[in-house]
Amino acid sequence: LFCPACPQPGVNLPDNWEQIYPEWLVKLRYVVDGNFSAQHMKMKIPEDDVPLSDGLAYMVESTTYAAHVSSAVEARERSTCQNHRAVNAANTSRKNLTATGIGATACARHGCFVPHSVVDFQKGERQMNVDYSICQALNYQSHGIRSSILAYDVACQWQINFLKQVQEGAYLQVPEGMDIVAAVGKFHLSAHKLECYP
Image (tube, rainbow, N blue to C red; front, side, top):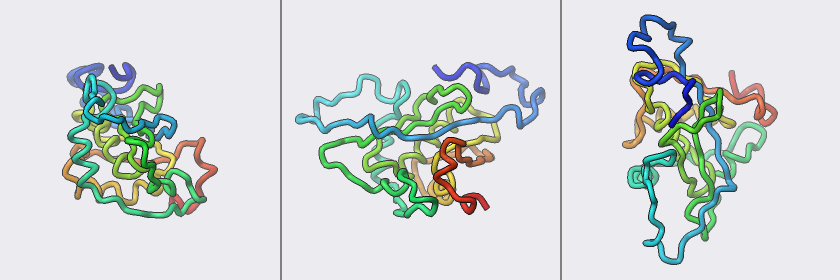
């Protein structure tokens, strides 16, 4: 289940919604963030770690996601905005964990997680993980929607390489013609400088 109020063609919009509503009204509004308290320890017998519903609810499908993580190239960059922890801690590792946390894309209005968009972090909050979550969310029940707003605490850093990563990534896809506006949520503005958005 997803947010009943967010626009979803074929679910809660009339068949002729593109003729009825202006484009600005039917817009995806998402927030993206990570949680480093949701760690997952390595099991003594890895074969016993079996998902009960792989990719059927909010978590992404593990095989495709693992293929993306193994093939994606991560740009190692230092944050240019006030030493932001999410960017600078992206390359930290913990040997006893299979996941150092999770990242998710959610409805910006009501906080509902977008199905199939929650990802595990292997080494902190890396762009390759967040890119996969965002692409999954933008493609979820969004056929025909042409604009989106993504609020992310490090959006100024993330947006620099996102479209390049999508073009180069075999497992990343943005809906054709989708206009993406990146924004930093008000809560996180104190960690940024005016130069973050020219």
